[in-house]
Length: 389
Image 1 (cartoon, rainbow, N blue to C red):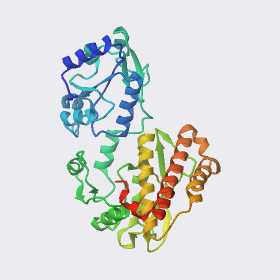
Image 2: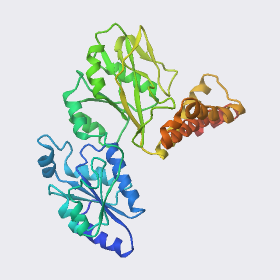
Image 3: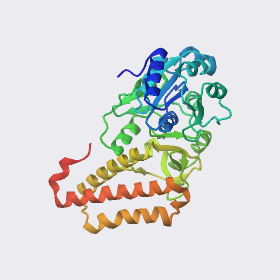
Image 4: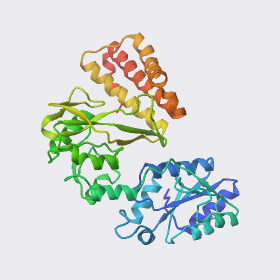
């Protein structure tokens, strides 16, 4: 089904949905450089329909330039619309050329007009129009800590001499977008995290490297602090990670400060090939601490988180088995339980509320996946061919 449709066709779909008693919602925006904040906003809008119809209005290039200024959008309107349409939570996408959504809303007459958390229900400009049309305004998404404008500004202003992107085989336009923004793009099929990071280290041209994964961002504090740190005597710096789940910064349960060595001298460090999961940097010299965080938005949803934990568990089990490690039955039962108790109770993960509980159980699930799989490999070595891909 082609989700990108003319406004008139979307209006017909709205009439059909209303005839069936289905809730119709409209969300709108530029969606330039689609990021996790956009995804959570649109998923939240879809959730508000309770299985109904979500129509997303995407600003044309002309209207984006009028509101964002010269140099925007980064992506042309057709590509932005196609990216939004690719999301499973979106039913239809229409382009609109006006500076606000009044004409879009008048044509579609939705039950809900959904905006992101940078608004309140009272501050939405089209609120009175929606009310006159018989609908209401709603807010969805996580806290407003994602911004394409800020992202582009940090990329363009920069604090580094080179931006290197190592792409493991993406098919979503990442390579083209990175190249368009001035990055040097190198492709390498992904096999494991340690080898991928080591390859990236060898490809970098600078004396110092700041290693940032796809679901991470350098904070403004890090951008400001890094140049001064390079004048120190240390060979590497351990950086604190601000881990987020569903918009909540996890401050407890072992998730903060959660330091990782990410800023380092290229010629004094290398990645340990024996650590294919949760890669480890081997440092020749001193490692210091730099209190400037990396922002980590790794889990888009609980389902995504659990799938990632299962993959981590599989890769860790395979690596342990290759090193001669074996698992006993008691480890399958008790190591996951201990992981939960340690994170949720001993490290006060309960202070992060429901997100803290969810992540404590997710980490316990990773331990279960690791040791259950290692036990299986120990008892049935031929099962290695059944590894997750």
